[in-house]
Image (cartoon, rainbow, N blue to C red):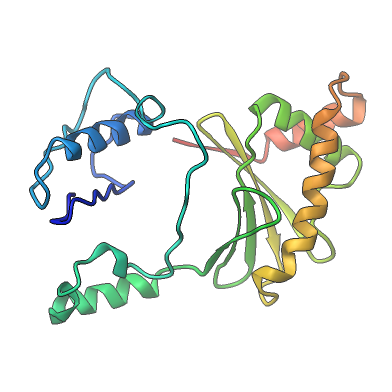
Length: 215
């Protein structure tokens, strides 16, 4: 959608998807840029071939802002509508508390009803990242500390996202040191380009069995 002040909002969930989320996002942004501010954006359901998200964004580190509620999506006077206000309250109540950690880029802590998680989007080549995690698994160094569990990994668009189950109560800041320690171990393992030994190969097979591909 386009706002009257020229801002463009792009949602990641659509009823119809082409199977290439990067292409879907690119065509949505390009369609919005061609729409007058405040106008209705016409986004094709199945855009076909064309530029993908990485083709239209400038190179550089993204400046990401996390919001605790959905108020950012609304115009200033929209919350005056009782129906909108009620819908907003329901949406806000569904949000799991989430904090971006400072100890590793793209690492996030979130609290769900029965426990908490740490999820880290690894920036490295998928195969190299998997080998590094396999070395750590073979050495018994995959955990973030006492009471934690390596739950598995998401695999998304060429990136691995390891996930840890952690105790629910400690707040996000209390996990910074543990994540920093793991990041150091991971970096050291990533630098080792020698062939995997027997224990690491077995650990790799175990990790592959705990991997879920997101599309």
